[in-house]
Each structure stands twice: as structure tokens, then as C-alpha cells.
Length: 171
Image 1 (tube, rainbow, N blue to C red):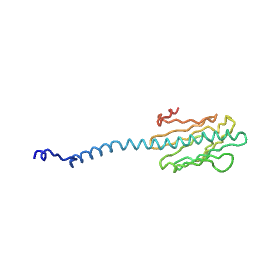
Image 2: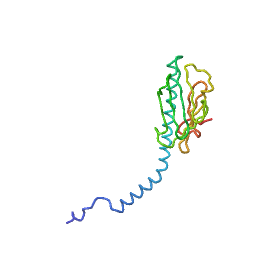
Image 3: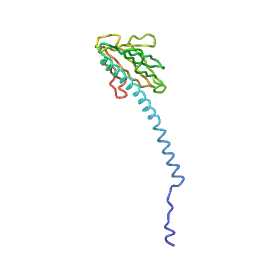
């Protein structure tokens, strides 16, 4: 008889389960906006890192070609941005566009012989001080932006307006 009285029922009550669900819902509601910001920053960083890598590879390709060839980089800016890199010919070796990364990332180009919404520059094996080769492209998503700059010597650098994304602050 005593054993029957000591038997306990194991499990959760409906009230305990509902309290746990409410606590989880509150935590998700608090974390969702921060998580969305993180996703936007990572999407923008993916665009910037890919473009930076492509420009550095284009510079290496120009050095590989030597005096016999050039590498041309062409940017189109705006909401429907894109760029292509052509090595000594007419067939692009690299082509990227905004829709490769999802909507929302915009690009604004300054310098690089910009005419309208298109800008282009040529990379040669000789590091000539070509003022047409200086310029930048600023990628923006929401309130976060990062800029890729190319200097007279052909160096490519990344900065951001507020030091976001782990890059140095733009001067």
C-alpha cells in the first residue's frame, strides 16, 4: 500500500510548458533585430571581400601578363551594379553583379574615368602613376557601408565609414 502512495508522475504540466514557450518567444523577439543586423553586415562583407579579392587577382594577372597585356576593370554603379574584369582580350574572366548577393546592396563609384554610371580602368604590369586608375567604389547595405580604394600605385585597400565590419576607418 505504501508503494502505491509514493509513486509519482513524471513530466511537465501544461502551465509549465506554456511558461517555457512564452519565455522562448520573448527571447526570440529581443534577439531577432540584432540577428538581422548581423546578417546584413555579413552580406555586405561578402560583397566587399569578393570585389577586393577580384581586384587583387586582376593586379596579379596584369603582372603575370607582363608588358604584353593589360587587365581592364569595368564597374557599373547604382542599385543594379556589376563589374567585369577582362584580361588581354574581350572575354571577361570575372563577372559579378548585385543579384549574385541578393537585393539591397548598392554601389557608388568615384574616379576611374567615370562617365554616367560606368567607370573603367586598366591595370598594366608597370606601376605607372596613372591618375585615371585612382578611384573607389562604395558598397552600401542599410546603414552600413564599406569602400574599396585604388591608389596611384595600384594598391587596393578597404575602409568603412565608422570602422564597421572590422576595416579601418576611412579618412
